[in-house]
Length: 313
View (tube, one colour):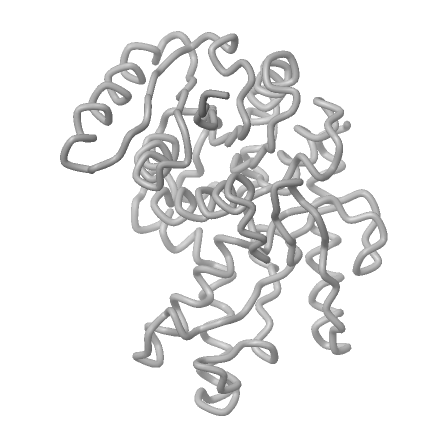
């Protein structure tokens, strides 16, 4: 039987989508189809061609194409959705809900028709509500749909700790729970640096400052940009999730997953530690939380519930 590369569909060819196309190519995860609306089809085809012309120096083999036709994503193994209006300065994630819900509705229809078996990773904001909407609109099983939230939030938490302490980010381990918004829950108690508990090498003031910066990380970048939001770090986070699925790496990554009783949550997509395998979302891990941590989690659950209910799905 001839070897056949995996197929990755990137829905949305903006900043995150084009960087994803480059990262997925460099990782040689498979062939890539970048899809955007008809008005952007030529620029998307141009970006795909540019990436193909980078391959000789980039030392990767991947077929990269651009399109506006959902039929071209047919049979995709992975679908990563970045389509949507980005946040601008002064705009909350919730402000985006109405406009991006329309976009997600169209995307869900196309993916359901042409890639019904794909492992789907949603990045569109407001993340927790958009992944819920995609799940409801497609009717896909829960192991097949996750949101890229905790992966990015945890990366930011680790990066800020490394920057603050002047240590390698490779030695910082930790996780962030909850919604992808200003009340997410970093867990300093379970964070280590080279195996050393964070509380033993950082002051309480430092830890509080780092937790606050993590919660406001997206807004910090939006303010600096003035227009638009983060794209390098979300792209790499999504690529990591896709790679764990495609290569069966069995990574435990914080993802927005459908909780059905875990952490006392029912019917909401919340950032929790997830085992990502060739089966998709194979398992959600529950952490025994302190009373203080649980109180913070209840706050983020309430926020996610409110935003999710606004989808009316």
